[in-house]
Image (cartoon, chains in turn brown, green):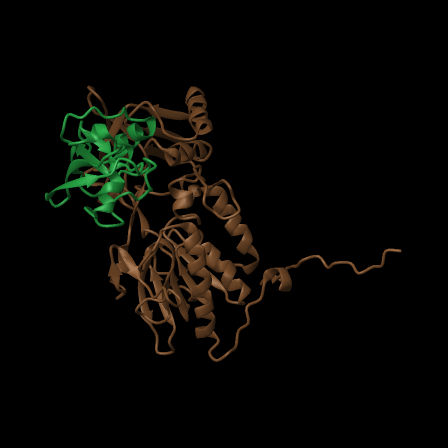
Length: 354
Length: 110
């Protein structure tokens, strides 16, 4: 069994709301650990629209979603959040001491007195292509997201898809894998211009084997994939030998296992007490950001920030029962990081002018 | 003076609804469907209307002259499931006077 990860606030979902909660918790000297089904932090902002602008983040007339994620990570860095990425929170168990143990689909266990669900629309599940026996090859050469590209070193890889992730991973793996084949239903790709141009360049150099317009129609191999079959329109199916097949057709969010945690759910969202602290019907479990609902709820990042802040106050009271708390302004008291760093306003000079 | 238009939407359970949609609020079809809660929250309009998911895919049953698909919509529909020749993304269909009488069916949830 793996080691238990312990923390003060266990945050489920590493999107903007979860990341900002780390900062607010840090001001209260509470440590956070985040679980996210995606392999990188940022949630929707990194996964769906990293290159799209957002115009309603206070003080940012315009900021790209990916940039917002970077800024939030930077802002909370000194509070040293822990991350369990690429794993989905599966079960929650209340312990006799009042803490919770949350276990992921990969068996990683986390223990904390407070759980904050900042799960947005749910965990992002890969959209799987309709190939009859694909499930038989999952973790046997078929993967829907890439966590560790090193496992493809000197292997033959077939990637399917026409978006940014298919392009970017084809480019990246062209230096790692022994052979990269990219198959897409159309000749046009939808991605950042530089990625499209780079793939063109690698194709011209023979470093990426590009097959378009075509669709993968079959998978073969005993126990592990060893070939795929693809079909170009109006052509007979052809086979290519491969060690891996990675369909990257985007992800769609599902509330998933959280729906079975005994939480009150309404319209695919978790009901919370918005008059107070965004706690759910399970004391100690909070829901903040897009995943919650209450009268007048708006699914906006800026509302998630507010909810995260109030949740941290309630968490402080749970973790430090009976302790009084006085709100301090960062400008006045500065920020003491868990890494020993300190940020503070420069002292003003008192000096007479003669 | 802009007036409301009437559109017909068949939901994912096969139930048909005829609803009034305002034309002066810059709404798209996906937003109107959400406004009337014809599909559960969280199952439609996931990307917010950027043509970056296919959760608002619908089949256009009437012969309305729709605006041409943008490259984004075209690319998204090329990756989506359950796509038919009359598939469109609801978020890309603006509610204008010309859409009066529009008849669509929501595509199944992916």
